[in-house]
Image (spheres, rainbow, N blue to C red):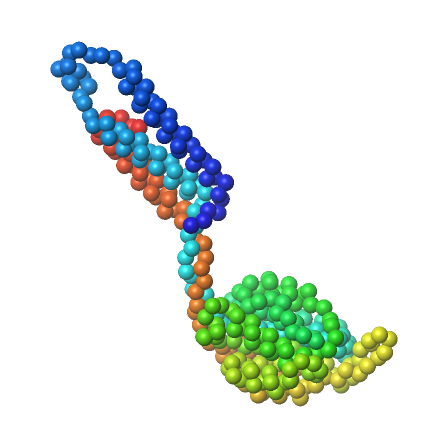
Length: 315
């Protein structure tokens, strides 16, 4: 068990203090007891009661105080809650060829806008992660239901050299396999959406990526950005960067995904319509203040009832 406001637990120091005061008071009562020689009369005006009764009432009262303090400290207990496991990975090409402006304002900026629009439009039940790929592929946002994390990762993307489409697929598959402790044996239903201008110039091949995606039974949908007339200037030299729609379409079709072009990316809802659902579990700390408050209230009522019954007064 944990406490969300643990600073209030310092008040528990008052409980042993009250206990010491109670013990000292009981010793003082015995020390200053006045001798009474008329025992029959004493029995009538002050009938003898078992000492354990007042000790029990005092113990209940101190326990109630302890429970109230712990309730103020907001106790929380770990509980298992259901978690939707369906996952979509968005892989964005950050190679320098995406700097071409044949798609306004550039292939890169258009891809970022498309990725963010897609993420924002996903139904709440989906987890979403983001992969950036150029010479290598990196998971910049692990799969999560937190849309803000995924959107911020897209905003923070920067351009780099080379293009490793195959590596992007492998990185996405690994992120899906690492989603939770059961993903290795029971991977969640998933889909990969890859945004690129299509040339694979580094890393593992497209055919290897296709085989891996098919083995995992995870479709890859692609969005092609660019025209045959795109150019970029690198270190003062202008280079033509054609879009390779053939490669992207082959990747999509061979993994049972969909192939799109930038202008029809609004149809991306097709990507998640066929994804099933799978519930897993995660452990969360759930506040249980009400339990402590209820116990304290029950002890307060028990303390009051026993005090009235045995001593005709409240503690």
